[in-house]
Length: 158
Length: 158
DNA sequence: ATTATTATTGAGAATCTATTGCAATAATAA
DNA sequence: TTATTATTGCAATAGATTCTCAATAATAAT
Image (cartoon, rainbow over all chains, first blue to last red; front, side, top):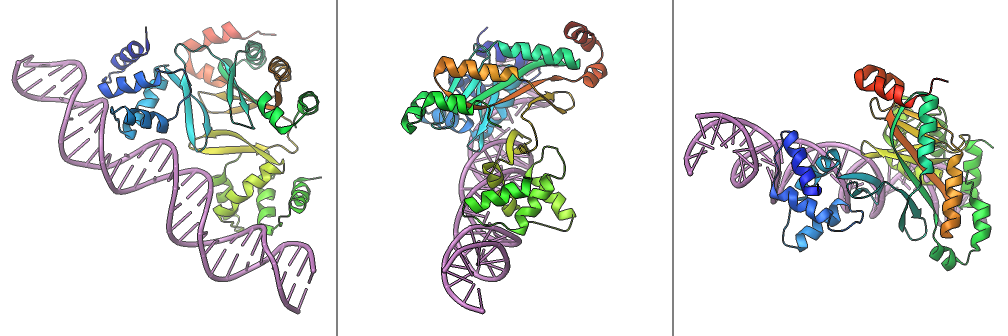
């Protein structure tokens, strides 16, 4: 099932109605694999002459989250950013504090942390969000820092 | 060094000026050990008749972050939430999707993940943010049938 | 097909968080 | 004590998101 099909199913089961506007939004979102935010999505559609009002975009996003197509990843620059869930394996993020670059990486050890916490507290853990931050290689080079020293030096921040 | 002292030092070294308003803000923040947000902080101070303008609170927060007293923890309900850094060991959060409860826990394994990522990419990792979500014991009980399965499924009774 | 029902749309107003400009004030240094 | 200038409070502003409402259109019923 592709994105549109998943959404159609969700819409039907929820007693909502599908619309061309919503399909256009979904199509645009899943055209690339990148993170996105409302404003750039809005402008992209506007440039393509298939303009959709911002209100509709804002109203569609919770439906896409609810139907498991996308999720919130982080709030930055005063607004929320989203990423794909469908067709996009779960992963963690590294954020470079120098250039703002976001790098995705997979990390199974987090699942062990989940299990451990779940067992010790008697809770049900359904998911996680892990973000590392620091400086990427390019930024370290640019700053003239000695990488190895800083790594050793700063691994334990607080 | 307590919070106020740390802040006085930071202010002096940065060529800024300390003020009674800022000390009142710091005092109120560190009165409890809880997370806080600008609005509740503002209202607390207002109720205590030591009213401080919101602008001053907003202008003080970056200084408190810069001086290592507090940090951003999560964006929720349309605004940022903060927590203590000074006097508060680094920790991760569990958020109950049922009741919204936040539980803090310590987890050293994340440091291994940091190191591993740092080594494999040649990046400098300076910190992390880990959030688990799911359902706490109370919410699992409340919900009935589904829960028993999940509890039995995921909990190891010592 | 036609009609009835009502969810959805777009445009703009309203709301909410956060930032900024400005005149008055007050913290520091001289 | 005086001069300098950071800080304050207030109001204005900016930006993101939500809401209002009349018009439209997707579905269900006929």
